[in-house]
Every structure is written in structure tokens, then in C-alpha cells.
Length: 154
Image 1 (cartoon, rainbow, N blue to C red):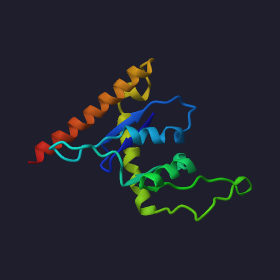
Image 2: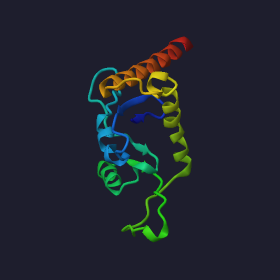
Image 3: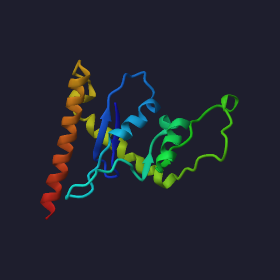
């Protein structure tokens, strides 16, 4: 399962893939699924974030090119490859900001929170559609909890 969340840890979308499928194969699909409504008066939802922070699994030149073409900044550390197997990249190495990368823990905390639901952590559901329904139900619980906090503070 691959997740996208905002900077506050609110889930935006998820995709379920087989365990052996690499993360970089679904990263463009993940970003294409995200639609964020910015105003209450309608208008087109935003589908292009300003910044993508991802782990080493998403370090693929095709994904970096996709982000660059769409004008999206990214903070993705380079994969650790032994010196003998390293291929030379053309151009300058990608920039990496450690301070920004530390914010990626928001995604890890979201995954931990989702896996607190026993049904999701142990994968009770046999069908992928049933499993994704449970994941989306946990998303709804997360948003309801956020709304409770918001309404309780005013």
C-alpha cells in the first residue's frame, strides 16, 4: 500500500499494489489521484503540489523528470549504490535539503496510525477491494477526529 498525505498528516490517497511491485512504478499514479479543493466557493481542485518529499524508494530518474516537467520541487535522497555498480548521472546531482526531509516523518506517523487498526495491520480482508475499503474507512475516521478537534477549539 502506498500513501500520499499533506503536511499535517491527513491522508489524501492510497494505492494498493502487490508486495513485489516497486514504489517508483506507481508514484505518478499516486500524484494523479490527488485532488485538493482550495476554496469553498467551487473552482477547480489543485492536483499539483508545490513540494514532494519521498524516501529512497522513489529515487528514479523517470519520476524526477516527471516532477521537473510539472514544476514540482522534490526532496528525495539518492539511493545508496556500491561504487562499482554506480552509473554516472548526466548534469549536476539532485539537491537535497535535510531540514525539509525531516518532515517526512509525518507520513511514517500516518502509516503507524493506520496500522493501529488491527484489521489493516494483519490484512484480514482477502479481497483487495475490501482491504482498500477498510483503509478508506480509517481515512474517514482520521478526518472525523480532525473535525472534532477543530470544532472543539472554537
